[in-house]
Image (cartoon, rainbow, N blue to C red; front, top):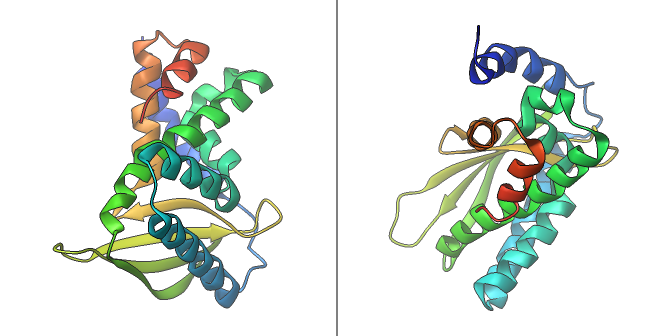
Length: 198
């Protein structure tokens, strides 16, 4: 009999196709680029304002909720296990996921103090646009950061990121799948763990 992990792996490709086979975006390259430029400006503003780590992470969570398609990202991160989740469980997971991502990646934004992010260009993809940026950090080699942007939700939002070629959503789906396995498939317990992780 296949394990839950094996089932998850076998169905991952089909789930990803269903999730990202989105209608063509009505956004233009210019609008998508302007959207990411504003996101970068808001991140820079949080960093420049300073404050405690908890304060900054709280502000990053607000930005994540504003600029990211949290629903679609959480749906993908939960993967095929979302099929058996109730509406309440899905909402609780999405809320926990937003906080988790903000804590985990918000801590990394401290590396950007004294640095800058430059937008390199936009490329059309089926769901919308891929916006390529380069992060220049003090004392480190430049880092490529790519945002995938779509207006599937009714307005422009990013629904995935690639940091130095690493797919954020694939990485987090693997992490969350492992957390779920440790809890014997219990979505509520995994969500509680996620709300404290990061």
